[in-house]
Image 1 (cartoon, chains in turn blue, orange):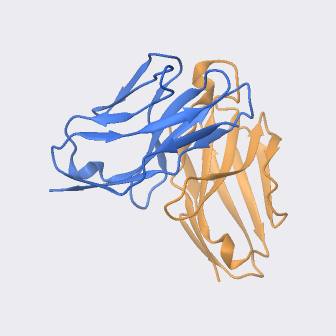
Image 2 (cartoon, chains in turn green, brown):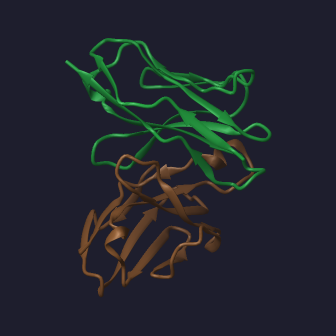
Length: 113
Length: 117
């Protein structure tokens, strides 16, 4: 069945450090891929998305590229800020399958000043 | 405007109470969702409505009863809940369930934090 695997956290970085959060997926066909972010005490926000191979999603300095050959959608940011401290969820959606978002377990990021 | 609103923000209820959670969106989305989220876990899908009809019920206990009065509103009626039902309840919406790439983007509300005593 479809699944999403994220690197386990928590991830702790200093401000201005480089961030990578790994995400890989298994799916039949070609799912759409998403990164959602959840700040403390809040709901989920769509951070970025990609709908086909080699698409790059980007937002707020974050980027992720849909890699079909490695079935990956790793999240990166060149210079993190304290305000980026949150939980990040990778998710896939395959309309041809069960039409549900398949979620990774989430990766908690703490950025220290 | 990509806003989904939810009320109340917090709710404390006893196991014999009846309460309702409300969700509203004005983006013209035709699919709406209820999720349950426990701390530090991904959200778990409960229900999906598409064009105001229940499309998916993830075998949710009958003490949770969804309702979609119109395309902008989604309610979740709660009755005889258990303490283990305490969680963050999230509403989301999307353009549709299928039919174009943008259909799949789900926009979430801030959630209702429910405590069952």
